[in-house]
Length: 368
Image 1 (cartoon, rainbow, N blue to C red):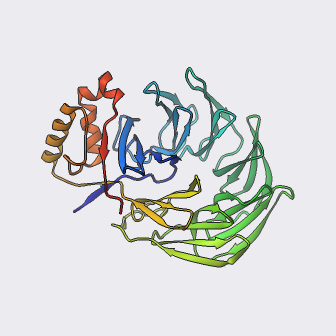
Image 2 (cartoon, one colour):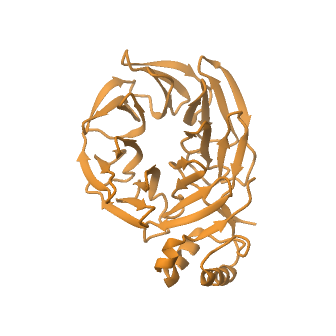
Image 3 (cartoon, rainbow, N blue to C red):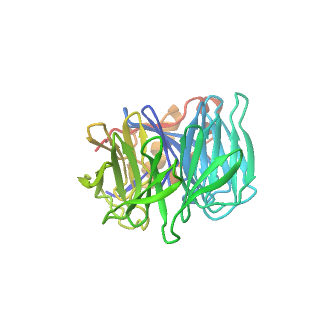
């Protein structure tokens, strides 16, 4: 049976057992509970639900969830307590505006990729305050906070620092190097990855970038845990590699459980990886699942999808469940997300105060 998969192309965030993300396929904020395998459709973010890749990253701070626009022109923040969405329409927009953000001193900083502006969002109990600041640089693909400083990795140049609403270059690389990701080694060193599978070390004290290791695999993202580098390939979702940071020649390859593959997907096989509470989370886009790598390297797979059933079954199931005020997988065998959202858009009950107080959820109990 064909399935419609729900996954994030790039950025997501994890808080305890909840994964917050915006699917590539539609502009709707989702929350996925890894303990109960329950997916909650939290809030519709944009009117055109058929446009893909509207939001590239997701950040949670206090009771706010910030969605970072990629091919959308608006930063959207969802207030969980008030059930309100705050919008900020970008003044300076470009194709692929922003790819990353970080929390810094109770503010959210959204750094530009193709845009020429960063967005600074101050968080308060009342509502978020937006400020758009023009910068003289863009193309940033990763950032790390260390000792009250923010280090930015530029795709085709090197390392920058952020301070007092300004960015400054502190180390450059060869012009033929195209960086994709960065991870923290220790208080003085950052590990950099380029699109050819080469690893570099940036020394903060020496302000220099030195090549560490040249692998024979092209990787897209990395994560460091307990002295080991977890590297996720660019073009294959069938495996990932684990390197010893003290000796990169020591590498162990882990096979990934084969799921229904997305052969038509032309871009990166994995998303960026996240380390949370000692566990590594990454979206395997090629096999269309969320992966969690535990402390002992045991892998848990979460398939967040719906069987593609007939439109009449979907409509009847939705009508029946929405009359009762909730949606469960036990009574609805599945639905494709754009159709689901379009029905929610035309259903008065979804917009009632009672409905807002109880977000629609689907309990999905198929952990691979």
